[in-house]
Length: 338
Image (cartoon, one colour):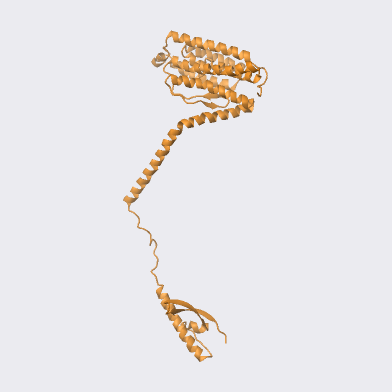
């Protein structure tokens, strides 16, 4: 006789739970289904019939005990807050965000002086790297140092005139610039600011000159030459060069003479920098020329004759000394490596 087994739930009176018990004669156990049963052993037939009926009954009880209510969409979720609560929460979040942004802005304001210093230092490094491609690193570093001292002269004088000025920013192959709202209250202040750069720059160029005289190294000679030449070039009486600033204290007519001389210089010695100075200088000179007869223009250029003479003497004397320095340190060979 072949027996098969089926797991049927049976109530355990000791534990009070339903246990799964194996029973033989699968056809007998599934007697709850409307199907015929057959068994050769009448005793076993009665036993399995009772067990089957009992198992089916327990299955129905278990099924009824698991008859839960259906789960509806959204059941178990917290109640959605009303419109006023949502608006209040949004305002609170916005206030917190603004507070954080305010704290970050305050920290940024405190860091601005350091950021300006980093801008000067970073642009100087970029310029040194650019000039090093032509002259090598030592000469490029010395050249940028001379540029820095030249621009520092402008910054110092601007602050003496009561004008806030930025730290120098270097532009590879174009030099360096500073930012200021004005050049001073009148043409005399503008002349002092313009001449301060070449004065301090010329003093700085005396350092490599002294080192050349002490060591005889052509490296220091070339560096002294480039310093003298740089400051002499800036004394051209053309805006926006330093010489053009100085001429504001003398006469606007000198700007026209300077432009004519710059045109001749650019014709015989073509150079991109000279062309840039010519374009921007021409635009600035024309703008200032049109304003010379306005009440504001006349008041700006109304300075004592003694001041004009002092500016002229400083300009001519500095230009003469720089010309001598350029002639004495001129090298016909390439830039030495150090």
